[in-house]
Length: 518
Image (cartoon, rainbow, N blue to C red):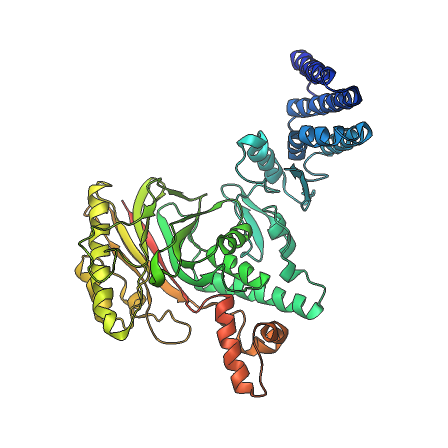
């Protein structure tokens, strides 16, 4: 061990200070608590010694040592009030964990995360992990817990790879070896989803097979451009009552699988924070969310609009907010604002910035199409002005569920008249899972010197791979819990079709790959 005399003396001094200060405080307390506080301080000092020794020999130090110590003092003092013996047991027990973790190193015990009084054992890093990944692990995660924004991953990669069935890769470091399905979840420090680890063998097999089918479908249908620093892989998805619909665990897993294949995803119909949190849990620590306030009024339906993005590639500008229009711009609403105010954010990829407005235009009555058109015109004009005036000229994207019924109708024409355009194939691609309506769209308005160039585009229908029509017998129990089945097979099949749309969405994912040409 590479010990330095100065560091050892510093360790001893810190330990002595901890003991003296804690004991001094205990002297002023009742006699019955004095010994408890002193013993707690001694145990804390011993653990501080182990931590600092671990820092000296960082090649063998395990991240669990630091996180263990950080949570030790409040835990120990919590028990000290009632039982000095319990204080000693907690101190020595956690000290033993820290010592074992230190001596075993990253290739042995793995990581023990202890935070806020809760312990979570995640899958260990074994000798099967290549040496460069172990080195990256020590390099990336050997930092103080208060400097770490998320829970540590087990190995070198910084995003969930739940949608990559074969291997997980480390950017710039090559491939870190093939792992089973469980390891792809353990990699980001989250438990294996209950939906894939149930005691019912039939459900267990059903969801595992669906997971792998969806992963293969995403790989086959969507280009893997996420690591290209001049490309933005963008998607828009109306996720149907996110947080309000009673979804299965596996449904959130599938939604995270889909989202993880893009750089940025604009989402509509967020109605509860819980739904978004569950998706983020499966996406992993690199993923972030930006979203606006609830839409006011009965037509707004308390909906929020926002974005999910991979922060390992994409950075977001702090100006994100709901778009506010001049009160005279819209006359068909009581407030002069859209029923669902667009949410606007600026995203940067390798220094190239794009302004994006996420919209969900209220469909309204058949005779309300003129209102929908005027609303889109005003939103598009305001977005283009912001891109030019507030950002000095950058490309602008107008995306979301604009409730366009046909590709050549007046709704899309209104956006194009404001200076935006879309890819011809994308414009005509249906995005409803029930009809041929082209509700969801992605439009771009380019600056003269900074251009987003359409590459591959398309729609992705998850029901081609999961919760397929032929899978209905496998979801019979779940369907029966949600609705009343009848003797009619056709009627039950229609119920199943509606039910699965509340599990994932009644919209397909519409996506586009852009080359950032500047």
